[in-house]
Image (cartoon, rainbow, N blue to C red; front, top):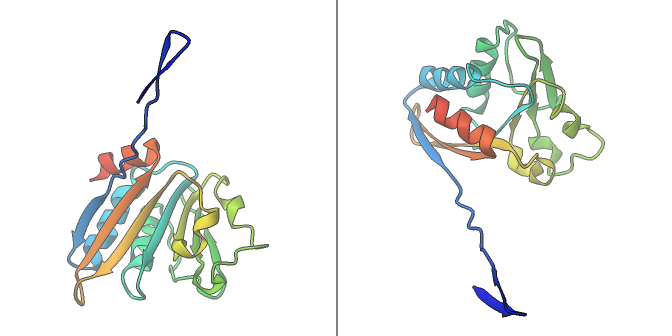
Amino acid sequence: MIKYCNNTFFFAIIKMVIKMEYKITTRNEIETIQLAQNFESEKFPNMIICLNGELGSGKTIFTKGIANALGITETITSPTFTIIKEYQGELPLYHMDVYRLDGNADGIGIEEYFTKGGVVIIEWADTIKDILPKERLDIKFKIVDENKRILILTPYGKEYEDLCEAVL
C-alpha cells in the first residue's frame, strides 16, 4: 500500500509470517529415539522442546532418546505427578509433564527453567501455551497404528529453524 503525504511516499510493508513445518514418520520406538538423538547432537543451552500428542504417542520415548544421548543413565519416566524431573548429563535435562496442571502453572516456576542452561522438554506443552517462550521447537505426535507415528515439527525462531535444517 502506498500513501502520499507531504510530497513523500511511504511504503507500508505487510510482513507475512510463514510457519515452517516438517513432517517425519517413525515406524517404531527405535526410530523415534534415533530422531531424538539427532536433535541432541545439535543441542544448545536453553533449548526448549515442547511435546504434544495423545497418551502413548511417544513423547516420553522421545525424551528417553534425548536423555540417553546426553549421557543420562537414570531411567526416564514421565513426571506426571512430580511435574518436573531434573537429570544431569552433558547439559542438564529438565523433563516436565504439565498435563495435571490443567493450564494453571502459577507458583511452579516453570519459566525459571527456560534460562537455566539446560535442555527443557515439556510434555503436554499446549496446556501452558501462555507461558512458553516465543522461540522453541514444538513437536506434535500423531498415532498412525501400534508402532507408527507421524511427528509434526514446528520451529519458532531462527535457532530452531537452523536446528531442524541441521537434523532433518
